[in-house]
Length: 273
Image (cartoon, rainbow, N blue to C red):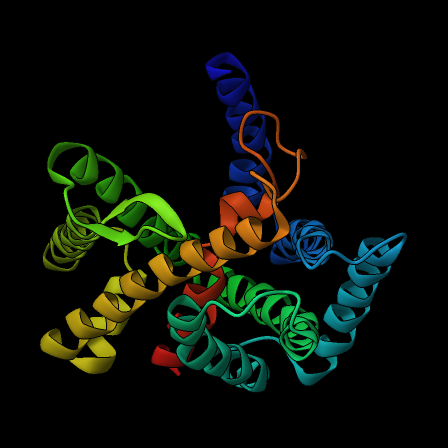
């Protein structure tokens, strides 16, 4: 299993890193669109759409993505999508973690059906807009989620005692979440004070909001990275599956890799708007 995970990770990095670092923005956008369409397919599978439903849903997501570019790419053109996705996560995210509505509830299932399209379109625009600001910026945005996850893992292993959401993800603890937050804060402060690789998400938030509010904004983003992770875990539990799919051997599916990014991407772009 470990060997499979490592091989898959190496292959993914061999594709993602060169495109991110060296390819034109258009090629980067095409790669992200490819990822988003597969994520939409998995979202539909978790919603238990039968037959060709997941394929049709993925095609609808692709069409919506292409159509959305007519509004323009960047913070201003994509703002309606960022706002809609942000509202979903700010309201529906915490609500569902507390109330845990089930897919058997028709209205909730329909809501997620529509919300998914908006979420994936918003994430595509956010990543492309971030890449347009520079390689270091888009990598720092991704790094926030990776650092929060890595910090949470090791802190949870070392100190975890109090369960964060035992009914959804028994392995997550409050100590782990705090450790992930501290990891992000330390790296962000080091990056800003050293002016390393600017512009980064951290330096831009610092310039836009000032130190105290920038740290608060980063705290919000870390918190919602946890929400995104837990939200997908809840969807998998309701669907009765361990992974969103088997597309990535050893890692599960695309959503399993990007779940924490789904709320962070549009919220980050809104905070910078």
